[in-house]
Amino acid sequence: MQAAVLTAPHRFELREVPRPVPGRDEVLIRVTRTGICGTDVHMFHGHYAADRLPIIPGHEFCGTVAETGADVRHLAEGQMVVADINVGCGTCYWCRRNEVLNCPDMAQIGITRDGAFAEYVVVPARLVIPAPEDVAPEILALTEPVSCVVRAARKAGAGFAQSVVVLGAGPVGNLHVQMMRLIGAAPVIVADLSPERCEMALSAGADIAVSDPAQLHERVRAATGGRGADLVIESVGSPRLYATAFELIRKGGHVAFFGLSGPEATVDVPILRTILEENSLKGSVAGMGEDMHDALTLLAHGRFHTEAFVGASYPLADIQTAFETLAERPADLKTQIVLT
Image 1 (cartoon, rainbow, N blue to C red):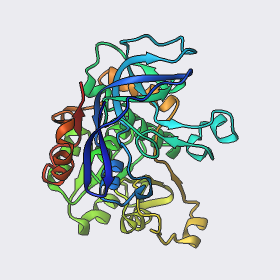
Image 2: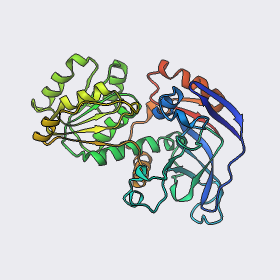
Image 3: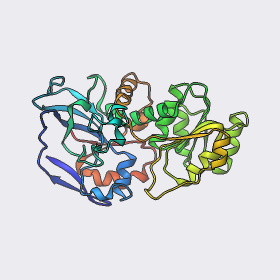
Image 4: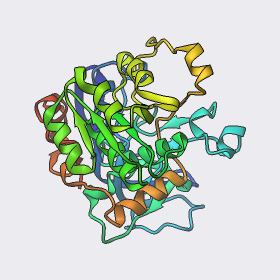
């Protein structure tokens, strides 16, 4: 099969590799579309999982069942599916609590094991989710990133009439804005240096967009009765923005750690203020389990504005160009690789 192998930072090679063979409890999926995620971009630039190279990345995918293992009964050949990429042991303390990322044996398809920038990918059958046949593949391939913001909302305890600031209006920031709008948060404020992406966030449901950092604190205070936000979601991965998040929350507010940074990056937490004001922080990065099912339901029923996420696509042979031109295409919130 054809596969795009990330052999070194900034270098994909299109290779002919053996088609994977599913085990008894696994499914071979013929990949239809795979989205380029921020994590893939970090890997491409050598900022994340560089010790895993060479690897076939790609974890935001949909496809059809090509072959099932001997013990798989609930899936049929040709069925359209999406997949949870987080492969835990299934029996440990963390897996039982749906905290699969903490499983000592956890692997992630397309991040720590070969993924879906290839014609075929193997997935444990328990993680394969049947998809509605009437939903377009370019929408189905958004299930995994939407699951991430579903989980972030759950972990943060976000709710209706809560004021929320989203730092970053890139692809995942835009999805955070839409998720907050769906659950009834108000007002939803987004901050990004790009006026264009701020406008896109407003179109997606943000109430206020701020592109001038000098105005951010004033705009947040003005929109929240001078208190500060109930919740601030950092979706960029910048230590400076994480520090800003603590400045924007109200007393008793919450900071959601979401944006990935380097392994050595740190942020100073105002300890005494956090204690006295009963502030809190919580990390979240990937959707799993029911998050994936909920994300698929929301997408299937048109609850997300997806127009800016489905316009850019490249064939597998042009994956190097797709990655190299991402920064030149800010209006394309998502770029997808078309396999079949």
